[in-house]
Structure formats: structure tokens, C-alpha cells
Length: 100
Figure 1 (cartoon, rainbow, N blue to C red):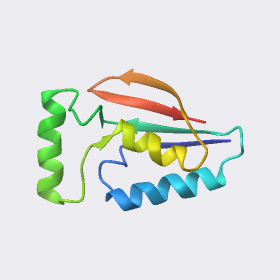
Figure 2 (cartoon, rainbow, N blue to C red; figure 1 turned 135 degrees about the vertical axis):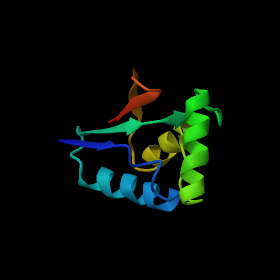
Figure 3 (spheres, rainbow, N blue to C red; figure 1 turned 120 degrees about the vertical axis):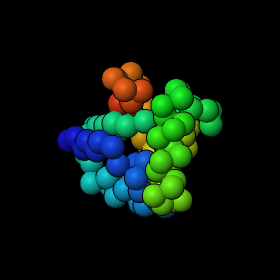
Figure 4 (cartoon, one colour; figure 1 turned 30 degrees about the horizontal axis):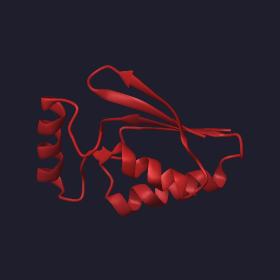
């Protein structure tokens, strides 16, 4: 009924994020919710200077890492019949995105 992932999408290569979304959506019930916690960019823009610095640190460790755009995440979920139902602000420039 529910899936929750925290601080994962920015440390995974983008194709693995897409795979995670696909596999998760396949396993959820039709009324299930998939919650994603972490930092996200909006329209390709960082939400804070600290997220920009975090992105630099992520990419220095592995160029395939990075803060994902919310719009891209929404497109991936839409490919599997899910939409963003809520976007909650959290501490330290993080968000919780709720897909159903």
C-alpha cells in the first residue's frame, strides 16, 4: 500500500532512479502511495545555495549522482500512471513528494 524512500534519488544514477520508480509502481496497489524524501530542483533551479554546494559534493564523488528535477521525477511517475498528489517542505531544504 505504501513505499517510502529517503535520500536515495540523488545518490543513484538517473537510469537507476527511473528503474526504482518503475519497479516500485509495479508493486504498489492501484491506490498505493509512493513517498520520496530528499532534495529536488524545480525547473532546473536549486532551491538553496546549500543544495548547490551539495550537488557539487555529490558530483565530485560520482558524476552520475545529482539532485533530480521534480519535473523529471513527475514525468517518470506519469509513465507508470502515477501523479504527484502532494509536495511537502521539510527541514534542511528537503521535500516529501507523494505520488499516487
